[in-house]
Image (tube, rainbow, N blue to C red; front, side, top):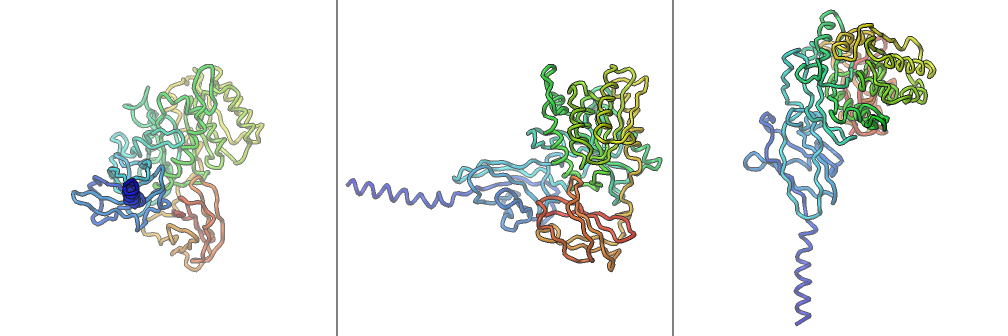
Length: 474
């Protein structure tokens, strides 16, 4: 009888074993955006398929009631994923149409079902411009900062001709986004960045994209200084915050907007604590930024660290720095600027790479920074031009990089220069040069050593202007 009991128990366990072996994770999408194109295939890309956005084996199946579902067999543990319509250019967005952080679920190895929704498609969002300028959009109300596990609202100013043109533009990354464009969100008045740039554009300026990053409120001091201040409290998260701008936000902006991503056309700016972190960012990432606007900087918060950082880092590239302080501010603001400029000279920078303005009536206030913004912008971006020669009209002969996405190699054809040798450069989204070669049209260029991600490809024939397009290394 005992043997019979044991046999029954063993049989029962064996009967359950196949179910355990085929345990699966089912993902159900309860709703998709109303503007999802008819007949679109919805894919899931994640840690289980090497983030392949067009993987035919991970296409969701339509279900009754407008739902979609797929059953996966991922490894046990954390599973990260996103939904696409077959490519990263058609990835899902958040409720505002901006960046959607990864979905994350912990797979236990047992049969498991999770339900979610696709809130928007980034390439299908129709963004309403800000009524005050016609050129300001909200990129995202909750852009994820993986370096700090937080989210943040991101603003963007686009030049007046952005929608009607195919030109690429320089980019200025600015701190305290709440205070840049809208009086309703500012603490004590806005900078009127959009109005200033619109006026300059009307006067012949080439146009510039501005990315405004909201400060983190209670986290502002922490994020705007890489050095902690034990006396006043706060600081110490500035390095992670700058890593977010350089390694997360800038790649996204360069991949989705017509930017000029090289360092010569990329700047950073801020005031007060924002001036402190902007100076740090310029020095730490000289291969990414070539210019900085440093307004009424709170160098005092970090003591001698800003000057020491400059001396320790040294000059790696030519830069342009516009220092500003007001005569009505505490004397130590201008004195600290002098310490920093002296350190720059000691580190090998030339006096022509910096300028300091100290208007007697200036105060530590938005109205002062608003008044001085246009002059600072013009000095910093003097000589910058949009890539008008690269993509000046929609009828210009095509520049093609294929296959795209690429894995092992790419080929480049330029319909405007079919028989001429081409100078081809591949740039990382941080502006760093990854490949530089002279090739014949259609000649294979190896990209197998490049890391997976977005790249900018610049091409020109002898005597011609650079033309630019994007490439994805998969």
